[in-house]
Length: 271
Length: 165
Image 1 (cartoon, each protein chain N blue to C red):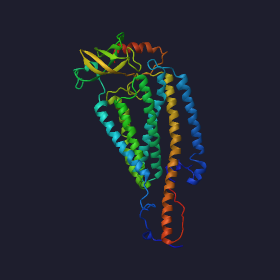
Image 2 (cartoon, rainbow over the protein chains, first blue to last red):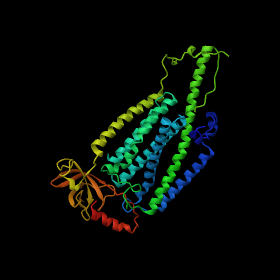
Image 3 (cartoon, one colour):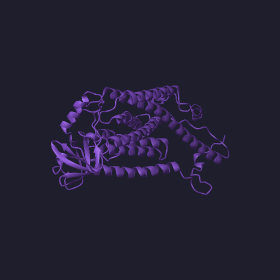
Image 4 (cartoon, one colour):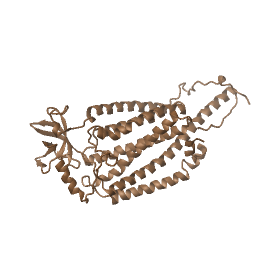
């Protein structure tokens, strides 16, 4: 069992077993409860305790979803790149790394979509427009589209190993857009404001309760990401096993035709 | 048990009853998505090169900086001067400033967003007789978040107006 396999040690033994138990385990159920609790915590602080902003008033509460979702999306793309790098350059070519990379990218793309959607609402309220082609918005849109392309490449067909190899190359290149997005507001003049928390300049002010609510948002969405990642990567493993089973069944049928005997064979395990 | 050698197997793609290979919709879907992604990527990069690089000119750069010519359509950034906002008929007039240089603005209608005095804005429009006739006003809110009840707010507002960011 590789280290990545051990990370998913609770994965059910076969898709048939999974169909009875789903992709959940005791650990994912605990993680799910923690996610729900932290989301409730975020609701209480985001909508209740944190104050309105002097300029944006109540609209500032969008901050607690907009910023955590893009940070966790950055994390998701980084995990995709890390797993891709280990798969490409590591000694053991575990397909589990590829599945974690793919699942992480899927979730991160969904989080970027949330960031863009709530950002558009926030923009309408504060800027007066839903969208403008400024540096931050344009680079974020490019990041979003790039990873949709990554997900499409994963579905181009071929063997699992071919899928893993070609998507790993893209996963390693695409992650270079993340620092470009983050630093776009400093590299170019932008309608979007500069960073508040991850700003190298001292003296950027943020209310204490607003900062704490933002912190709660980061925890809540990170837990949600981890919960989704475990479930989705296990779902991908099941898809691979079913693909292999389909191939094995087809080969068995051909053997039976050639040998004149029916010989359905059990599917092999996908590593 | 009869052993079947691999070379004896007919591994050609199986055909359906109509004699055609069953289409792989999953792969075609991915190819269509990739084509759309390439198209969208091209549009985004084009928008980046034409719009996103240097989104605006500051007021003090008009006629000075390359691309900030007063005889062409412009996006001008400056802070709304305190006490300058007024309504003239259906238009809103105000003055924006940056680094001590001011520019009067006339905007048909009421600016959206959190438009108010002492806040930086980007006005899209053309300069006619030394007045920026705007058709869009966008508010650039700062990266600072202060409670409405924070005692630092009064100082921050004062500093924003004095600074003319």
